[in-house]
Image 1 (tube, one colour):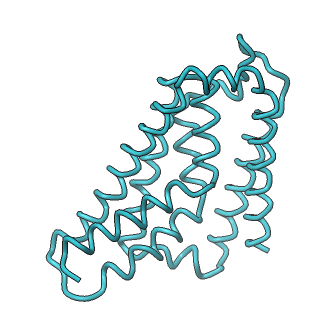
Image 2: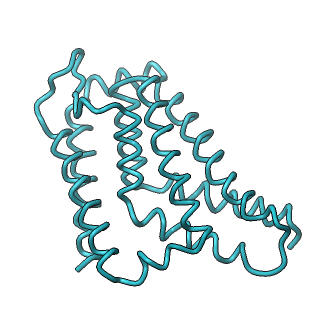
Length: 202
C-alpha cells in the first residue's frame, strides 16, 4: 500500500471511530440541540483539544500505561466514570433554562467537552490500537505528524459539520417538543457508559 492509500485508509477508520456512540458524541449532540451553534462549536473545540492530547500520547506509544491494567488505569477509569455520572445528573435535573432548555452546568461548553474527552481512557486506547498498524514498516519522518494532523483536523471538521446540521429548524423544533425525554435518554446513555467503564476497571 502506498503512502496516499494508507492515509486515506487511516482517515476512514478514524472517521468511523470518532462518530461511533460515546460520551463525546452524546454530550456534543445534546449541547448542539439544546444550547445552539456557538455552544456546540465551543464544545467541539474542547473535545478536539482533548483529542490532541490523546493523539500525542497514542502516537508516542504511551497507551500501554492504560492498557496494562495497573493502578493508573484504575484511577483514570474511576475518575472518568464519576464525570459521566455527574454529566448525567445534570441532564436529569428539572429544566431551568428558557424555551425548555436544560442548563446542565455553568461551566463553559469548551471545558465540558475538554473534560469529557480527557477523562475517557477508551479514546487513548482506541487511538493506540488504530495508530499502531500505520506506524509499522518504512515511513518518512513526517509520517507521525501526518497521522496526528488527520485525527485533529478530521475531528474538528466533521464535528463542526455535525453541530451545524443539528441547527436545522425542523430538528431543533422536534427537540424543543421532546427535549425532556431526549435529555433523559442522553442521561441514561451516559450512565450506561459510566457503568461499562467501571465494569472494565473491576
